Length: 122
Image 1 (cartoon, rainbow, N blue to C red):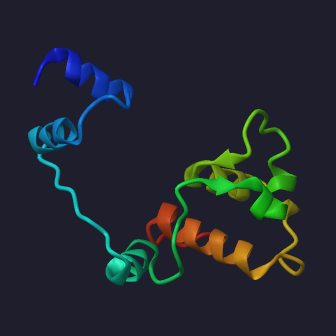
Image 2 (image 1 turned 120 degrees about the horizontal axis):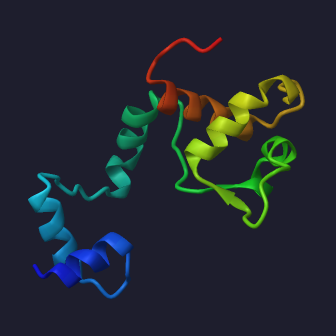
């Protein structure tokens, strides 16, 4: 693999072939696993302790209380799961769990399981 290709992989350029990515992963000692619909639920249960799945991006419009406490976020309508978890944790005292939709509570539970690695959260 050339230095130019490796540099393009590091920058995330779309012109790099999948084979080049596989070679880079192999050099790092990493494997790729294909997730099919039949084992996606099993994978979600393993990664989130059965609480649900984590989206790749969290849309602020889908979670009203997150949008309310994320007032300082400008220029994007999406957050990474770790950003969403941080905002939820820092602003827990402002959340109204009694009025929160079940979908948002499930997201918070999944984020907590994924990012606290089983530690008790006070």
